[in-house]
Length: 83
Image (cartoon, rainbow, N blue to C red):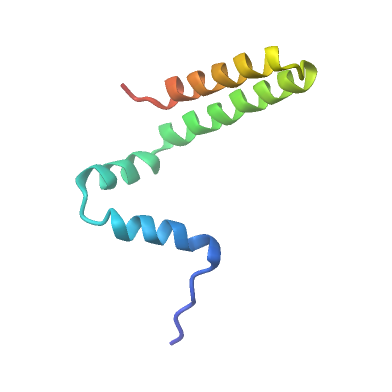
């Protein structure tokens, strides 16, 4: 009867879906993102960032922050990359 209006938080996703509609690689990305293995890797990335955040709190100096930040980024990309 009545269609619900999308919330403000849903607009970026809807715009991205609209812009990428019909693209083969975007559809494959959506299928890959919905898989159980991708969700497991994503949760592993969250644990990596949680560990890095804890280490950053222990050693808040710039000499520690930058290497920890870069290491967390590298590990996250390595975990999420399927190839």
